Structure formats: structure tokens, C-alpha cells
Length: 114
Length: 108
Image (cartoon, rainbow over all chains, first blue to last red; front, top):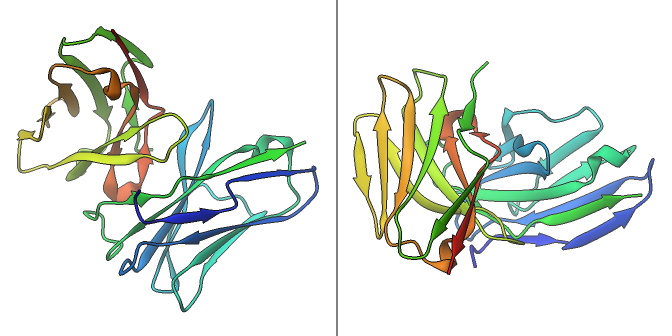
């Protein structure tokens, strides 16, 4: 158990809908990262937050947004969902958000768009 | 652009043999690399890391080798066990790039 929690574990929804994925980092970690993992794309970095502020952005679509709240939990919002958004979404956390930090990954949320 | 890629998508080894998983990177300025293990149905888990001022680092049954000249790193697993079956990723931390992973299958 990494100490990172993600809810829900599974999510099934329809195209065009909007969903919110939630992540609670390990106690004491200030930085949160979001990744998308699909079969043919591997693990793709989406976005990083540190202490409530966006720190780095990867291949995140405009239909997706995220935020980190004062209690350090984070939410990833996915809107106007398409079939291709079906994937595993992982959250990770680290202490400082520095490049040399070890990232601790949560168990993931499996999103299925029908 | 920068990338981190793995040479082989799958690797099968006999239980007890040593495993070697390779990874190439393109950014010569990269100074920190991490290997992660992802078991089926779980998130990636940190195995070992190495900084660019080192060329070898050892952990418990695992060794990472870094060759900066050819921008290549490898993960060696000694005496591979069935519990080692997983997908292995190398990551270049500063850029958050991961490859598609190498799937290691250990044959009992």
C-alpha cells in the first residue's frame, strides 16, 4: 500500500459525459501528479500540482482539468468524454515535487466510456 | 522531443535465471532515472533509481546500470522469481516520461 488513495476504483459512463476522479496523497506529500495509462500509449503524464499550484503540464487535453485543494487532495475532471478516454488514470504523490523525488502511485481509477 | 523507450515489449525468463531489461533515452541532459514495477491491477511501484554521476547502483536482487555515452540504462534482476512477473518502466524523472514498459513473464 503506497498510502495514496484514489476514488472511485471503477467508473463507467457514456460519451459526452463529465466525470471527476479524486486523489488523496500520502501524508506529508505536497505534490500530486496525474497520469493516463491506456493499452497502446503506455503511461502518459498529464499534470502536476505542488501545494495547490500547477507546476508542470504534460499531454493533458483541453477537455481535462485538475486542481489541488488546500487539504492537498486533488481532482481530475474529464469532460465531453470520448471512447478514446477509456483508460486507467493514476495519481501519484511526492514530498516536494522535485525531479529527484520518488513518486508513490495510487491504485488507479479505471474509466470506461461507452 | 525527449523520449524514454524500452527495447523489448516482452521478456520471458525461466525462474532462477537473471533478467535484463533495457531502456534508451534521448535527452543527454537527463540526470536522474528511475525504474518502476507495475503488477497487474496495481499502480507502478518504485524499484531503484540512479543519478547520472553514477554508472551502477545495486539494490536487493536488482542492479541498474547507466551508460551515458550511448544513453542507455538497464535493470538486472538476479535469480528471477514468479513474483517478479510485471511490467517494468524506466522513467526520466525531470520530464515525467515513461516508456510503454517491458512485460516480464517468469516461467516456473
